[in-house]
Every structure is written in C-alpha cells, then in structure tokens.
Length: 140
Image (cartoon, rainbow, N blue to C red; front, side, top):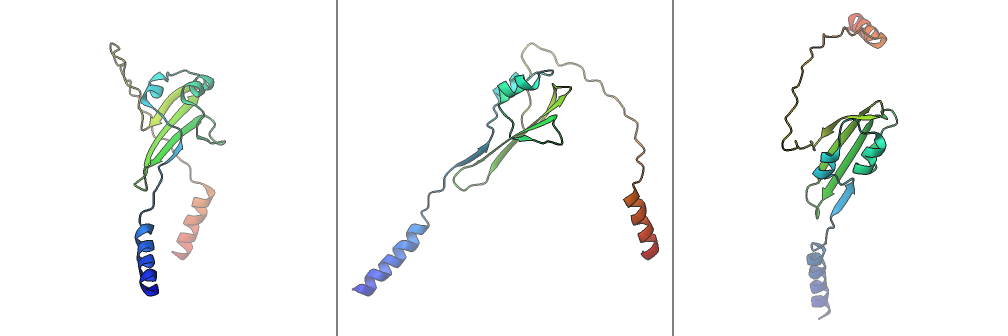
C-alpha cells in the first residue's frame, strides 16, 4: 500500500507541475493612437510630457530624444513590443519615429513635401584608420 501511495504521489506531482499559471507582464509606457494624434510640431517638452507622460528612456547624451517603449507578454507567449521616439529641436517637438504615426484630420489637405538634395560630404580618415591601413600594408 505504501509503494502505491508513493507512486501515485510522484505522478500527481509531475502532472501538476505542468499546470503552472503564467502571469501577463506589462512594462513601460502605454502609448495610444489618441495620444499621438494630440502631438503637434512646436510643442514644448512640458506640453509633450502632459500628453504622453514621462518617457521611459531619456539619454543624457541625447537630451533632445525621448523614447517611449512598451512591452506586453501574455501568459508566457511571445512578447509584443511598441516603440515611439520623439525628437526635439530648440526645446520644441520636431518629429517622431516608431510604431505610431499621427492620423490625418479629415478636411485638411496634406502639405506638399519639398525634397532637398544634399551633396555628399567628404569624410576625412581618422588616425586609427591610417594606423590600421599601415599595419595591413606592413603585415598584410
């Protein structure tokens, strides 16, 4: 009788360990399309913070870039990731990049986009490139 009880307990514990509840995990800033639609070029950082909330990432080396990142993983499934980057110029909202784009308002026409051709810039070689080329020439 004792052996049967041990075997039943063993198999029951193996079966029940597969029935583990996995929680939903949300991290970051929840960004909605209605929030993005409220953004307008020229808004100052305080106005943007009022609409969007505090950004998740504020890089000290790029203070004119705010990143809003949101990840959601439902019950151990694949993680969904949303990203929105806001760019400022002279303390005014200049643009955005990422998974969200402002929806055009009905009745407003799209402005014409002017294309500017920028001539290629001559990039000078750095000291490490010159040293690397020298060693490749010597030992190459």
